Image 1 (tube, rainbow over the protein chains, first blue to last red):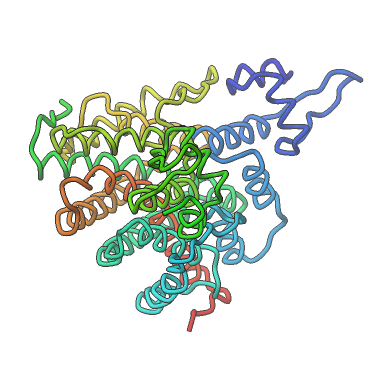
Image 2: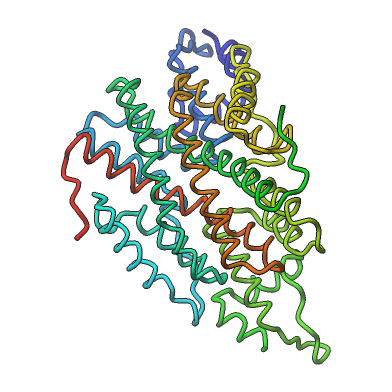
Length: 220
Length: 220
């Protein structure tokens, strides 16, 4: 198909498509004449992936480039691919750790609590995993704003995370072909976060309506 | 305390502190002379909140301003405050819906599935809630990249969301004073997302190591 049809099919403007090609997110079309290129179904699929990661996942172009690089990597052992894809999706991955004031310093303590949680749950994760570090940073941040006791409900969060990860794996095992594995994990991880965040809001609104009363209309 | 001490205590540079004051995120200090101001513990606390929302929650300055506005609002019914605070934290809230191509259009179907889920779970949420719309957008995006059957595991995600929302409420009811409620919900919502995303990665890495084998060292 021509670029105009690719644009109509995906809702992405022609200049944006050209930008993605320049940025290396989308393979160039096959040239049929010096100034005309033709595009395939794989371009439609890839454009949808890019838009989903940007619009719904809130990823930057640079972050999308990393995901795409993982997706396009030649075969490597499945576990390694999945582990890496999951790691690359950690929020704030590659960023600097938050600044620490002189009476901050809760990060060292938070890391110990994360290690204890991983041992207690018998989670098999790479030592020094970026996900473990991201968790420690989030815990330390909660502590820094006066929520030192949030750790008390960490077990409930971990239970929920296991339930979601189990559902993710079940879905992957049931519906995803080997060659689509990394793409699925990448997109499922980013969109799954957005999905879960929205569900958590709905469940919070419901829990607070039940607990504190108020109008809280039922959506009927 | 002087601005230099505020900077040392929080790890936020003096120019950044002045920027937050100009942007209306942080109240100005009390002037003790024409070019000297003094700051209180409330400034330390507020600065930590701002940094946590930006560094860990990944919020923009504009989004932080919205959260702060909710935090500083005079008393309104608790349920309304909580519901609103949760709504404002929906990812992509206020943004435009994603572009739709001519063979997209899955959003209408996705909205129906979200309505059905809300009824089935008997979740009390505002009709047309931004959280419900965010959920529909995430579902439609998954569908657009070939994951139409992700809905099969939506129940597991909803279970997990209820578990987390229950834990959030338990924490709030146990440890949070009335006057800190909105701040707690705002920060807990943003940081809780980051916390849960990190836990989900860890649990995914564990699930994939168990299922697919591979080196998956235990962190011991």
